[in-house]
Amino acid sequence: MRFLITITIVAVVSFTAINLYILQTARADCHTIENFGPDDSVDAIIVLGAAMYNSGPSLMLRDRLEAAISLYDAGVSERILVSGDHGRNDYNEVEGMRTYLLAAGIPDEHIFMDHAGFDTYSSMYRANDVFMIKTAVISTQEFHLSRAVYLARRLGLDASGVICDQHDYLFMGRNEIRESLARVKAWLQAELFHSKPRYLGDVIDIRGSGLNTHD
Image (cartoon, rainbow, N blue to C red; front, side):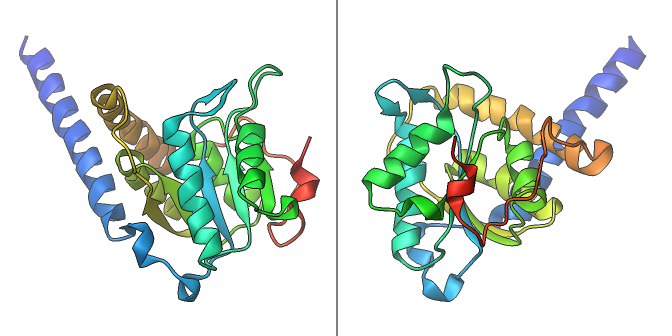
């Protein structure tokens, strides 16, 4: 019984410490859209995937894309990397994101598609290793942004994040719980296991044309 109690206490303390560490590490690099302008020029704006429906991006994903469009229009970068799940023929987050950006007037050659961004770790790893991005602004919701910025920096990117929240989202309580667990997983991946993504592939330099990444 004492052993079980000790293990439980260690687990709870470790869980809390890792979450606080990631939140504090990334806090200074997470900003609202008003804080960015042409003087904050980066290699790319990275939009992380979320649910995609037949009718188009989910509300959460639309807000991420809208923030990226605002950053693009503000001159922060001429390149947008959309990174998401395209693991099945019948589900394609990145094509849906590309379609949304095209409708907003973003040139096709400025949209880069990461078809193997199956999780935040993979997206950040591939941004550096495949797309040769060294500086970036990451667009996602505040609850997710600290982990994304933390991972980006641990994987070699000079990254900051834009808080794109414009609505109240469903199931935020569940999202917060899942995110607290995901931070622990991220810390283990980055600090202990140094995991590699499921897929890497040939280099596609972000300074080239995004047309090379399209289906």
